[in-house]
Image (tube, rainbow, N blue to C red; front, side, top):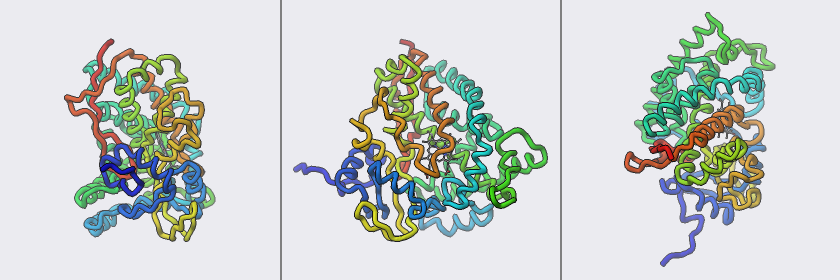
Length: 417
Ligand code: HEM
């Protein structure tokens, strides 16, 4: 007999829940906004107000090294040995707390200026064309492989001033996956070891680039990072810091934008009336991008480590606990977004979503990401093409992950209407 579902009937370890967690989120928000998930040994926070509380209280909920808490038990020794043979990871922006976070953030803001972001407009449009034309000419293909993965990586490569030929871009993807893969929380020991090896390869590649820029400075972000003074410390970043900083720019600039592009195109393929709506105005396209971010946030759950015993919404959380703030759940909270489950290209407060984070860690690349999303969605909408999921070639599928909503394939068929 069917019984009404309850929050305890769902598990984030279930691939079906990972790919479509929204029913689980409804139960979480209603029944248990701060929920102890025994299966992943983590507190889950799901309402908009509580998500903001956690993000804003950085003295209690820490980001420092949060990504290194999840290591497959069978891989610990080998991973530690591999890591010891390279430069140690330095907690940079997203994986750091004040006061060092503030110093790195100030340093980054001086380099990643609004002028530099504005100037990227001239680069993003041509990259979109470069990827769009062949994709259309061959009548479609795997949108993730051919468009959603290369666009953000080519953009971030231009920003950093590093090569962006297809072979090197494929390497960036590999290294980016190696950084983010362990965060999925559901990988084998072999994968974990493979990722640690890839990070060593990443380091070797960028040590050469950094040394080259030291000898032959250029007008690029890497040269500026090398020359920038760490605020309040009267020194420049050392090799370990530079490697961690570049790694974070590469990953932050790549993965999330890729997944948002994929989720948006999937919606356009599944709901052709949306494509029609986007043709009406640029504002519609911009709002569509916000609604994709809101309803399909690529980071579904950000992690924090609890530094001191605390109580959140009446629930005691001991020091040392992990908290997963489900942005994906907060973004559909009816108290903020009326009819929150629905994508509405005319929604007035679409931009109030939490997909770029909140407070001191608010995404530094949000304007650049918005530029890429707008430019890509507008190009497909304006083309007048019919877009369909190509089920025969493999349809679409997701990376197994506790924390990301991440398409890894999206086969599309394009046709002139
Ligand atoms: C759709 C695309 C993107 C999404 C959804 C996104 C989301 C986020 C989120 C949620 C955070 C906060 C993490 C936390 O609080 O733990 C963040 C931080 C950050 N993002 Fe993005 N991001 C995107 C694109 C980009 C791009 C294109 C860049 C740069 C090229 C970038 C650079 C950064 C950096 C440097 C941080 C760290 C800021 C800090 O900790 O002070 N992001 N991003």
